Length: 268
Ligand code: A2P
Image 1: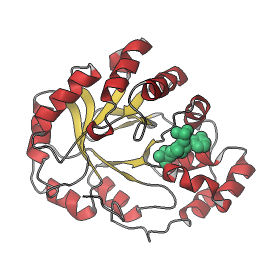
Image 2: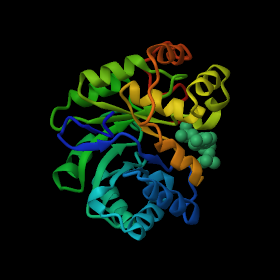
Image 3: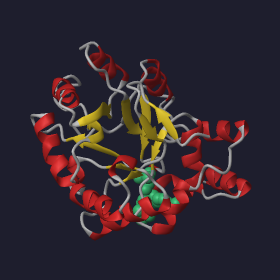
Image 4: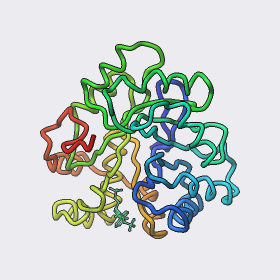
């Protein structure tokens, strides 16, 4: 399996990224990013509201890995007014000239509110690609109806337990790649018995099986961990394959009915 995917705008994105939601600013975040880069990750996913862009930037700089080899995503805090102005702040904190991907973090104030500012961020070269996060089927349609550069990514909460097949299908139909955040259910899914049985049979951990499922189902996947051995383990998923039967058994864990909804409990 390839380790990168081409997006609709022609750029390439590594299929696995380290997610740093709920990773403490400072030492915890710097260690996690450093371990990830040492392990071979080349994709880090942060956000303005995570409050740890500084630490991500410092770890990247200290790693010695060339900037152009690392794919950096951040997200617009939609409780602010101006996406491009907020991105300028992110770039300072991250210590880079541009991010690879800039997402509207959630559709605050309606799905189209931020889009002109996102397009401006792209046109000004502050972001190489733009996209959305936590957008439903209808909200994607509203953004596309505006015209101009379209989102190339929709980042949503996704796992076999939340197999949002309608949302994935609609996104892909519009050439919008789906990124899975909380692919381990923020850790809650790892104790599931059906998952554990598959993991034991294939000789992998439950986390590796969930990450592998995401890849084989066509997702870009963003597992989070602050432990070095887990960070290493979560990238070590290219040397095995889940069978069609195992994939189907995992698909059957879905509790959303294949929904087109991005989140059952929106916080906005
Ligand atoms: P920690 O950060 O303490 O290592 P998600 O990616 O769905 O948000 O899940 C993240 C949660 O799962 C975190 O609590 C993280 O714990 C835990 N986690 C991440 N990778 C693994 C792993 N390989 N084995 C066990 N737990 C993991």
